[in-house]
Image 1 (cartoon, rainbow, N blue to C red):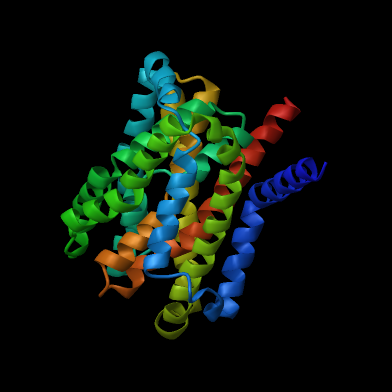
Image 2: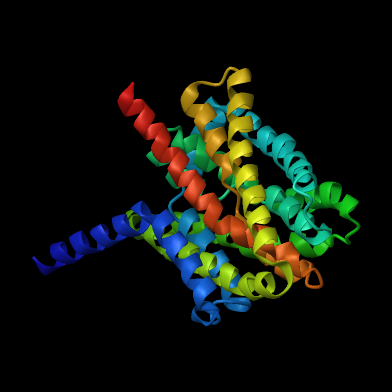
Length: 326
């Protein structure tokens, strides 16, 4: 009947939105460079609201039971996932920023990017890569839940050397507002309306994909004029190379960390995907809100929105291809 046809059509659209996400992200970024005004409307409070909605779309698909199982059976793996985030990313960002001779502002932005929690898209990538999805969702959610403490703390420790004032309390409040509140609301929705969970879960990845594409366009549109007027193409290419190197090296280092700790390959893959996939949109929001006088602090997160998703989804596809080949 018409109802079944509508469901089939919606599923096909959802699969196209999520399956080709790197393509939509790249197209949005390219169009934002050519015509920044296309995305001018998606900024300020709308951007903040969008980030909260993205977190909510992920959290409504989760139940506390999902975490209970992983935390009961895989405490060590969860701890290693959290530890990899803490010990690898921010020090590596600081080292790379100095190696690429980034300006003080851009270095702050790169460290802020490294201090942000793993992106929700890492769970989609884990599914594609045939990695341990439950572990990925658990560690990603825990990193997001603790980000209101960890993100300002890591930024303060590693970006403090760049002679910048880091408003740790302000960043904690912003992160709590756009991450913690939607996660709690999502859990409450699941407990109150358990029957609606499957329907919402079917469309939430597509909803998140649309918002992620808008983030890429909006972030690029905001920094494109700054790059054209005050940075120049050469510095932009250097910054993009630095951000790409950061994501790739984080993935490699996290995978090596997992294997050295004798994690099985599907679990070490989770570390590799989370290592290379940061919540760029959260870092961008924090940079815009808490480093307003440093125009280039938002440039690394803005560049990362595109680079991170293209890298993460390509890595996941490569892992799936490797399995088929074996």
